[in-house]
Image (tube, rainbow, N blue to C red):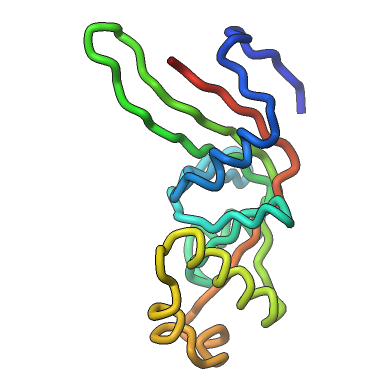
Length: 162
């Protein structure tokens, strides 16, 4: 992939700690998928695994998204921390990341459980009741058309404004 420089260098975020902080604070991402010349953008909530530098997703095993991923697992995504439009200044306060990586369906039961645990701990203040209600039985991971996806981040950039 051709590398470009950011026009406004003062807006660039390159500190890895800050980039990870933005991913940890986010709740959803917009993913850009492609099959052939056909683009597809999908918004999904996620769980961030710092140790693996990966995002985990929960989705259906079937559907347009999975068709795109099977044909081309390389994706690009963004997470935006919106701090609001600044009235009278024609400016917007934000921090964002753009990342690239490979999106793969998780096959092993242990990692499916890990991925769902990461996802619930990322999104929920108290994930225990949901885990007990929705994930109490291993059969849940093989029934109901459920898929867990892992996005292995290979590149990430960041930007901030005001």
